[in-house]
Image (cartoon, rainbow, N blue to C red; front, side, top):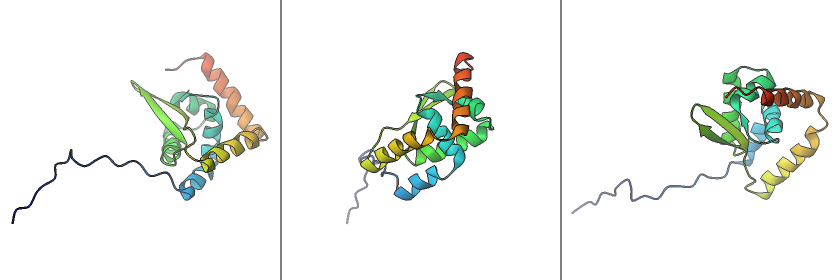
Length: 128
């Protein structure tokens, strides 16, 4: 009886499963993550600019970005030592509607406007 061994290269890569609804709602359940999402609606933002705009420590921002990335809400682009984040494109109607809801609801929260003003100031003083 001869056993065949499959090579590691023979197995196709598995696609990541779409994030669960629970993971997405958990990502939306934290104020810092909502603030990050709001800032990312303006386009690609460096982590250092998020830290300045949110006025929170870098490890906290990175932890929340990891949770958002795991939920499929943001994507990252690395350039040398710097990481730039953007909103992930909608992968489902559910995802699209949440982003749409977020867009219209966030305009009603004054504290989020302060974050946006701080982010605009960061854009004039490039850190990276």
